Length: 184
Image 1: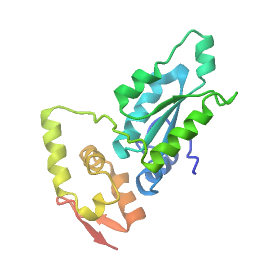
Image 2: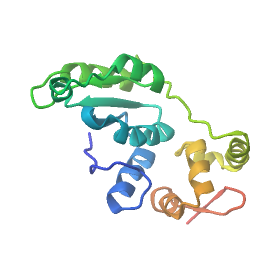
Image 3: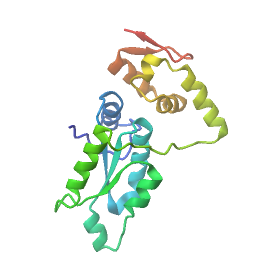
């Protein structure tokens, strides 16, 4: 169990974002819980989608649900779960509501009793073709540790921190244009 720094994104612009991203990518967590604020769900969904690109074993915890209800905000966790393809649990950590349910869902995801099938965002025909081309070039030794599609997207973005992370966490260097590793 690791508690990562609070962040709204995994784009690795800050040390906190990079630490969170690298742990989810390379730390081999059994599951990743993304805690979102029920009153700021829209702002937090970007992070949820980024985590879903990295790992299928993701769970959304919609916290502060009691406060949201008091303010007339209702979060339809069933619909959200259906749209995301991963478990969504409403909680109020302050008074303990939903914590037992969250722990049971985590146990089910970790054990494999509950399969997560995160929705994959699509980006249009041209970009999807580019993603597929890069995915096909990613060496199996890298793909054993990192989701091919996620890595292809980061490489298309020109994210140098991903290349640094491959070296730091896997001891591999990116050789572009063929995405193959060399040991250091």
